[in-house]
Length: 303
Image (cartoon, rainbow, N blue to C red; front, top):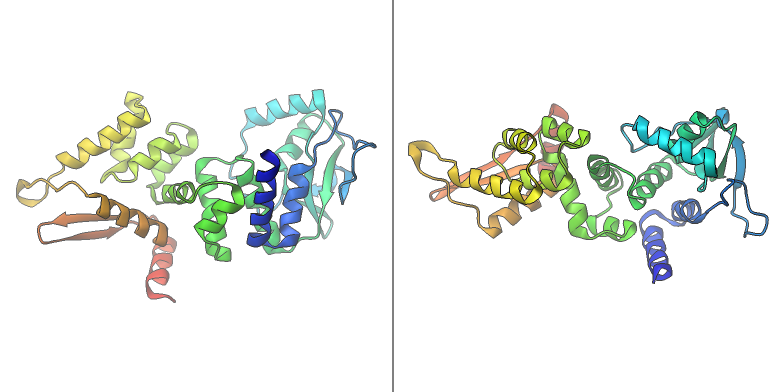
């Protein structure tokens, strides 16, 4: 069953990225070294696998990770001291050395463990392939924070015109998972910071997406240590209690309106809210920067 899943993912990656990038990901994710980190003479050779001095390697400019947790790197360094590096890094040649496409955290931990060499797989990759491989390899290994994962999907869609369905197949996720993660990017920056710090989970954040005042409710969630179900209830109660001009209560959103909000949010990449006001209503597009606004206008006008 596991072998069938790997083959299915391999076909999905080839269709999404092309054979060169897909084979690079397959090589680095399937290559497992013995506990001492050295190549096993009895194992099948992996194309491009070699030991390389750590000083010859440079961080990748397409690294999807925004921050490296110091404690996790220390834990990984301790594991490397005991067992070595069990999965090689993926690198490509550049002027003056080699650029890390996948495995920068292992490289940092190896230096902390005072290793002089690390196992790498060398592949010739274009800039486009390097970005796609870096994103997809991290997404497959579930080694990113929720916002890093969401931004990875967004970049793959915006830069390379991949669809949510294609991405879902490539990384072994459901389409709804990809869509829900991308929606997190529509949250206000202070709420996203709470998510990055771990004060909120992705489940909390998804519940807050439909709130009229997500930051206010997010602070309430953190202060009261609410779980996801309690957060969903809080958001629902806040929606029912909201009033409009003249003290008239806002009608609760029906399933079709909520679904339309989600579809518009996914299409525009920013939060979109729809509010019914009698015979008419309001459609609000939220943006966090002028760059986001420019992107929304480009999407709406098709320019």
